[in-house]
Length: 640
Ligand code: ADP
Ligand code: MG
Picture 1 (cartoon, helix red, strand yellow):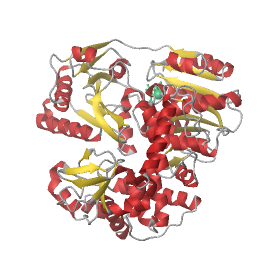
Picture 2 (cartoon, rainbow, N blue to C red):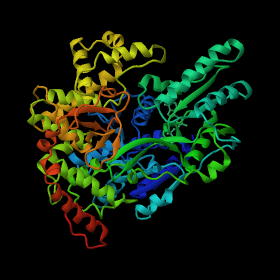
Picture 3 (cartoon, rainbow, N blue to C red):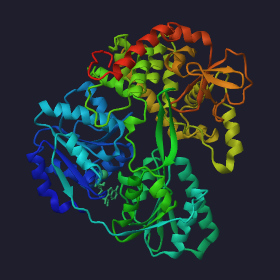
Picture 4 (cartoon, protein in one colour):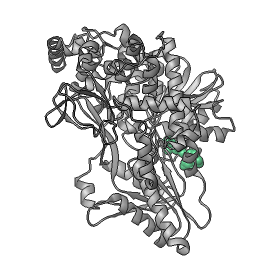
């Protein structure tokens, strides 16, 4: 591995500098080796303090921790563990902890100086996720008074000068990369159907090209599953005319035993093809890849600060991304990258680099967290790239509307409790409001079900009719949240049965995860002293999501606040329902984009009088904020 010869140099550099930027090609050993070096080095790790290593992705944190536990011969969760939201696989003995960047951020709430860490590694820094960007600011700040804390910022060969500059000219340690040449091929004309084009390309490579494994980049689970099915189907048809093709998917919701398969060696004579999301771009390295197929797309969060709507959109990836992807083909030998777009598109239609997440996402969560840490002056927070002002203002406005901030922008008691729950502000408000409506049992279930990401209903292609019928059987009046509640309660009645899930086209894994999430949320509720009781009451949901309400009027649903037209997702149980009266109002929860519930418009006044009644005051306040934000250094407002 490229890092091996530099072990001593690296450890010396870390000893000499408090903050060090480490740059190295993907696969050079940054993530799996450096933490091990630190663990073994008494100079850097004599005390019983932890080494924390952040990853932007859940899958990467788990997978890398498993790998390092294996390399060091310990059981995962003992000396080497991981921590991701709703899943803590660490123990008293844990010395090295891989974690999502969001988890480390939450640890500031309980330990503002990160006292239990001796080294913090912010890995995959080039990804510039929202949480990583916030960590930059916070860690830079605590490093000033915790001179014993070592900070490593590890990145692929991108942007390292900027990291160095941000961290007061911290030195950059470069791990010289070994990279073999990669031939790049473009299509002559744009592809109408890139999924089909991927399948055809893989098969062409398989029958015409020399041995070597293949990596395909797609945007998400559905596409990946479709692609894998198509490949398997066509190989079956070709039968023994072609060599064996081992088709393996990798995406976030794939169970971890399936994820691990991508690393297993290819059987002799066969070819492996891994169909992956962006995760294989830099976070995970699969050995033996010679061919890369890149359709040039990725799924990106995009945020409309005017409407507060967040969505995942398939967009062309950046040139930097495309180059990283191509690089995956040249790690072990000379490789080939097949770009399923034209050379012209690469030059003229792709952005140079990906816009940092902080500039295209809802900041509600992060603003609440920073306020809880006592950081009131968000304008002067040390952002590497500041978020757009209107996004910041909207986040404050939402938190104010939810009752998390008072009119001075200070954290309220409600806000403090909301911050304790590791979920989005609207969801945490819904959970906390359930106390008042005495329906927390139900709301906890709904929150847990919402957090498992649309992966509850199983809909295999060959049994679509059965699956849809099974789903219909869960329909209850009111809306999707109540359907989810119904599914969960029936599962509980079945005694958490696997068989029951199977018969009802419900994904057992998702249900089990929902149960885990529910248990944890319940534990947190106890900690913040919310009584968990049961009754059926939808107002609590409205209390969290009143922001996202739509009213049925001529021709369709329009959001109550901005008069934007919205549509009910075809998967929703309310999709085909006949329009009722004009006061029919819906709350779509944007966390999932398709959960909708029917509400009584009167509830809006009940749960959010400050927002729906005393509108003028809200607007006045906002007006003041906006001018504050616009003004240069005159901003004294405690709101920001
Ligand atoms: P970097 O962080 O610099 O991109 P890593 O530390 O993730 O590099 O990977 C270094 C090498 O370790 C990879 O080239 C790969 O060969 C190997 N490796 C990492 N994870 C696994 C795994 N789960 N199974 C097998 N090999 C792995
Ligand atoms: Mg890495």
